[in-house]
Image 1 (cartoon, helix red, strand yellow):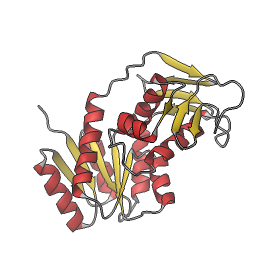
Image 2 (cartoon, one colour):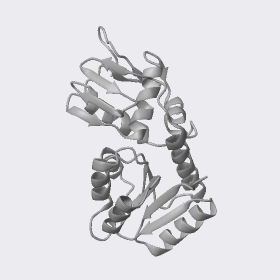
Image 3 (cartoon, one colour):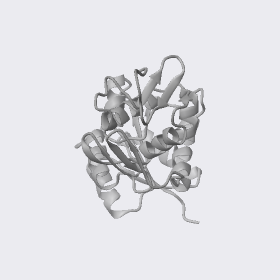
Length: 237
């Protein structure tokens, strides 16, 4: 069986060396690039199964790497590692298409769990929901990873597809944060992370006529989120 290939783009040698050593110890094939430009070249030359991406790089930034690769590889799992811990940095990375975000310093065990979970979901994920899902003025094809929303055609990332599938399969139900993290990310339900909220905000920008007053992807205060395909009357937001 072919080993998953992981590309690490990281310029700090002591961090890069540790990541490569531990990923190889887990049985992965690992490629290392020390700049964004070198990383983009490897993404063109090699079949990569997962990208581990630092943000602060010489030359072009990790943000720019993420933006460029999403134009041609919308489904590649991307895990950002960064010393930038402020919420706006996390939001910016996720908006550009990253699937997850860990701040430095991070737990090696948690890093390896995130990598293993992302690869497993990417390998085994097959949308159970077939055909087109239509709600409001939106149309979503999970099997093709394409959608038509308020901004026109959207190429969905693998993580966006997984989250949408969970919502579609449980339409009308209140799903707790823990349930969504477990079902869409494979995370421990008790994990403290804002990643889920940032992804819901992204779906609202894609599909809500007014993201500030959502009608389909609703927050149920103190309980979680709910997807409502055909809202009637007043809804919680």
